[in-house]
Image (tube, rainbow, N blue to C red; front, side):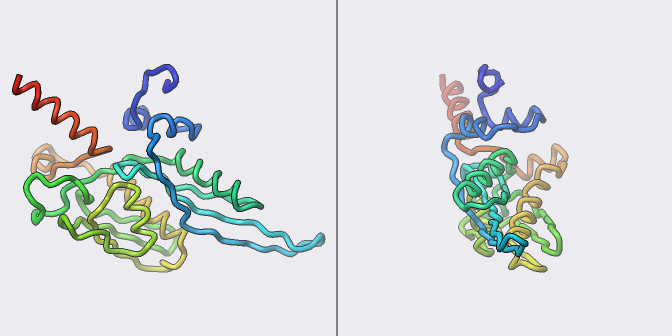
Length: 217
């Protein structure tokens, strides 16, 4: 469908509900993707033939404007395993909802925070993301700043408890919290009081500018 031109945006691709089978789909729809390796863990195992070494890698990818993905991979070599983890992160891409964050933000401020509180969990690690006023920044650990930054969230408070030193579980809990933002249902009145932007802000600005130009004409 992407190759035929029936789908031209990542938001439309995710809206179909069909799974992304190939990372090349993300490369075609989001060419400006960035990625980061969160954790490289070396696992050694003694066998009859000697010591075997494998690597477990966690990577995150996103366009810093409403889309982010998380992937894990295991392999014997670091380079190919990193590429495989990034490809799996692209396949696990999600759309992130964002909002102004607080009534303290300026009127008409861009949606650079999360619209409401969300919690995620993985094993014993629990993470809660809370909205923050404009200019607060990302108040959290290094993993939280990496994941939220690639998702396009610039202002948020991140609270964590449990085994937060386990980087993979911490990243999974953050990803779980971002996914739960899409499951919250709001009434029309709540949507008016809490403007929410889903997906890239650049697209929203283009639509608004086009509407203003039509109004002036």
